[in-house]
Length: 241
Image (cartoon, rainbow, N blue to C red):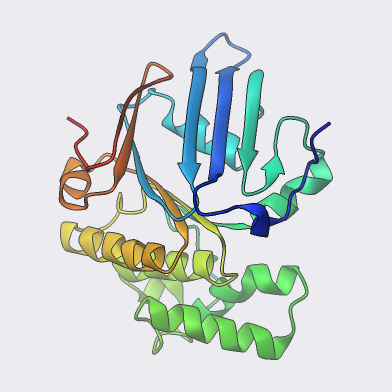
């Protein structure tokens, strides 16, 4: 029996940080969201996930985050075997990843610093460690001077950069970005993907869902295309057409 949790150090650069083997997902109403998906994403890759609405992108991401369980197949993420994962292990899995949402999901009653620090408070990090890491994360996204600002005082692009800082603050091995440019203007879209690309160059794996074919074309990263719950293309050069 495979261990549920492996050391993240056991991943050599050539080994997958995400692996799907024969994964299918059907929802109770009968919708076949994913059909026999087999894919490997290696540590340190930057991957765009594209496809039309209903193609299976959301289900693919939810399975990786263990928000949903597959009906069949094996899923491994960041050293965890998700196939028979116990509920109490799910928070451990999620601490190894940062998540960036399309709709920002900032807490409106907390300032920028508090929003970024919130997850660190929850797991009991010390105050000095929190202050140091939050300051570093905000500096990386160009918001070092906005720590005391409230979300409603920020532009959409700035709010998304707070979301990116929040995803970065625990130095995750994997960042999942679900349409992170969907609610910002085109110029900010490129800034956000540039930031994610720089983070990727430091060794963090990036998995980004997007509908923006201009970004996919201009940033020459690997592209996985889903259609009808199946992977219909897997290209290394940024060409999803």
